[in-house]
Length: 130
Image (cartoon, rainbow, N blue to C red; front, side):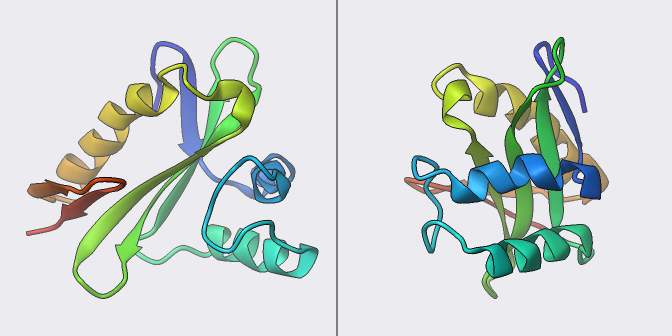
């Protein structure tokens, strides 16, 4: 995918060093807190071995190719919903990048995965496939 300011590419092994920066940054919140080296390796491995309903993309600044963060699309527990999650390094916060990438991710969800209905919750966006 491409936006005005970003490249959004499928996560690859070459992105691992940059993605690891998210997992050890104390300012980047995610369930479970800062990860240790063993859990980082396990998560990166799972990001490379995707199921048919899990997707990870690396987000990079278009003109410099600097790593900004990741966006993922994964099943939300067992309720049939897909969860869109973003993690950006702090230098890229509050500049509208998540919203800028939304359109591409949603387009993928609705067109490629043939999902129809969307539900919005207070802190997360969930999409259900019909």
